[in-house]
Length: 74
Image (cartoon, rainbow, N blue to C red; front, side, top):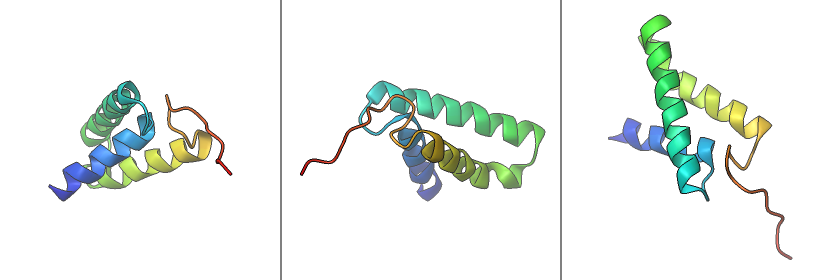
């Protein structure tokens, strides 16, 4: 169950934590990406690949794919 929770959290962060549709799209992107990696690359790279995708998305778009950028309230 731990792997399922981690992958679910990664999918939600990729899509945007404040967007339900974004979390669903993030899950689809992560699932298709992991399926392609499992099929064509290696089974041992599936778990690290999820975190690599997470790091890339957080570097390029910290609020997620469909999240809204908000400033901090004073």
